[in-house]
Length: 372
Image 1 (cartoon, rainbow, N blue to C red):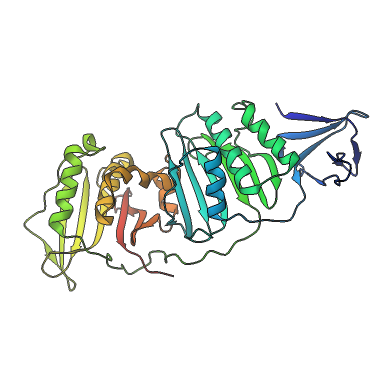
Image 2: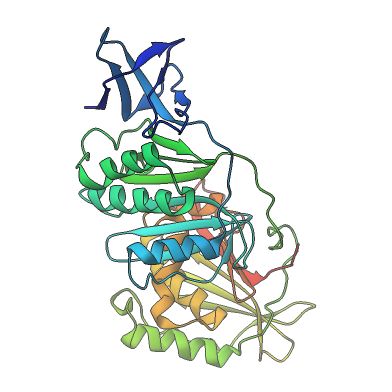
């Protein structure tokens, strides 16, 4: 069911509804009519002839919002939002917010407070989480776009009315567009779960960042020792949040060598971890992990603690790794990001290793990252 806005003194002119200004000295806004085939939430109906026009916003000058201003506006609506620093993912900077019910991704043009907000994605891992997505997306749009009277009314509808059944469809439902930003609702491609989107409609230039992984590995910026890495993975297997999935890996006595150093092959449950080290086997320089069973869930449960250990991250940030694809992405989704992410100068790239027997096994590279 679409929202119908009845305007008492409206007339349909050239298929565009013009509403009288709220105050006599304020000119009426020029509404943006939806293109044919666009699903809209807002419509304007004339009481004179009953004619209905789908409306997706008002014409206005683009006004990009900085990360600093967005954070300030959001924290006026929600107290102490746990925004992360900016991480590099798929050639963009992204800040993350993860709760039990939601994953919020805010993409910016650089990693500073003055970086401009490009887009915002709000995901939920639950089919019944549409109401939370609806509210947070509306608040995010209000914070970044600073809409006027009519845009604020559209936001209020998204805040006050429950539209789980009619707004979260495979084809996006357009809600409102103003000051260069637009917001809409849809379903995720993989599991058809509720998703909210806020996007700046003009192209923005991204600054800084890292190059995608190509033929040559870059060494880890601060090599972790083989013993420290194994000890950290053992600690995760004993008491970490994913301990039920993990056994404690053991560094084998035997190793191969190449011109750069040693190569250890560590069997770890249904995964194989390959450590490339310096000549004396002390510092790890590159890490590969592959799921021998092809089980992508098990692969992730081993990959996340491995990546956090190599980056020397905190255990409480372990599940943050899944949030770069909204917390419910598939291995195909993860592999599309080039790179998947860069944290503390350590790059993670997901892919598939194609076997001679036709199987494609989940594979990941962990190495250093080269600045652009």
